[in-house]
Image 1: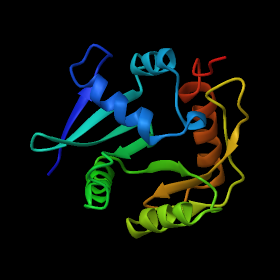
Image 2 (image 1 turned 45 degrees about the horizontal axis):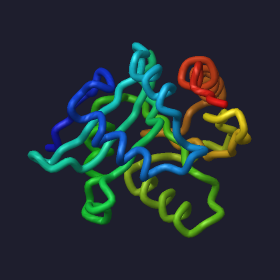
Image 3 (image 1 turned 120 degrees about the vertical axis):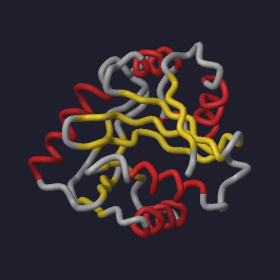
Length: 178
């Protein structure tokens, strides 16, 4: 079993290591500014997790707990360890802790995006066929289309609307930077 350490603030000894992975793993349009990261860390529903295999840092998950589901906003595996099963192990362990999990992936316009979808589907994630646009993290960038996945089942229209409301009014509150 992998070890999970939750980070409470940017002064945590692990924050720099987790943040370096975050910065290298995601393109600008998919990540928060530094000040927006700190605001998220201070939100009661947000949890930033560092994942370890013994003492080896293997990855990070930035996630939100809501009353009836969890939302994985960011998940990344240490780039030197990719392809060794750590993403699968992290997700399998995470999924045991939540009765419903929601995440988003890029549209299926590249082989990498298609491979990512197959990876999530192999773990039991379901595609939800709702037109979905994720609000921007940066005012000068446009909102971007994504595909909503959920585990262990598809979500009903009212659950999708609930997720979209949480995304727009909780997750993305105070996250946009000029």
